[in-house]
Amino acid sequence: KKSKKNDNPDIIEDDNAMSEEDRELKERLETCVSTLINEKSEASVTTQIRLKALDVIVTELRSATSSMTSVPKPLKFLRPKYETLKEYYGTIGDTEESEVVFLRARLGDVLAVLAMTLGKHDERESLNFKLKGAKDYESLAKMGDDTTTATTDDNNLGSWGHEFIRSLAGEIGQEYNARVLAGADPDDDAAFADLLGMVDVIVPFNVEHNAEAEAIDLLIEVQRLKNVLKLDSIDEKNYKRVCLYLIKTADFMSDPDDYTEVLEAAYELFHKQSQYFDALRVALRMGNEEAIPDLMSQCSDP
Image (cartoon, rainbow, N blue to C red; front, side):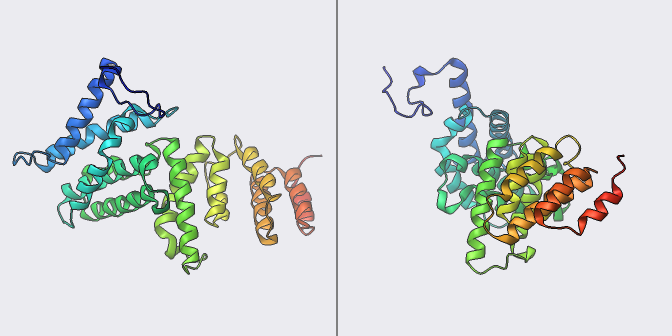
């Protein structure tokens, strides 16, 4: 049987066109999904068995998305199951059973990754699944469940790969703006606590993986640029890239306050790294002549 030509190279229509390895992967994932949702309504399918099936899906997705250069095979093969998994996720009601809560949290992670390419853009499905998952992980922590430590740490975001982080950051910016338009006070951290919690993970991750520009963009998007000064991951190895991007970004700031804030961040970072000459240049650009005597007095160069 010949496969029909498809305009989308990411969709594999004919099993005969796959390699043996791909076919085995596809069948394995489909079996895991079937077990997870208990497609045959078998009484023997317990939460533990569902979790084991879900672990296989998580492992395959993580290993494929950690260094994504094209749409990963597991993501392709799980696409047809997206709506089915969403439907099952919706059937998991409120519960105090830690295993079920953990199952729902892990499934939320998987759905967030799938929604990166399949979710409805306006509904920010990927972010919504992560936010719900974060609440479940928080509930598990309160329950004192120590079996989820490896999944509830900060790496729960970064372990899904840079493309997922980039997609999630975009949705965080959209959600932040939507809340501000709905009347939330931009200066009130409480109104954005769930979003800022993710920002506090994504920004250091980006800086540590040479994506300083994306880290700065996200902080500007959520109006928390001053947080860049708190990052331990900015050091003598990367501060120049960060500061250069901040200075270049200032040229595109139409609001005087935003312009000053961006340059002040660059000034403080230069100053923190004892780069007094560069800090002086930024101070002069801001018109901050009061900083000149202080900088000159700290400079130890002859």
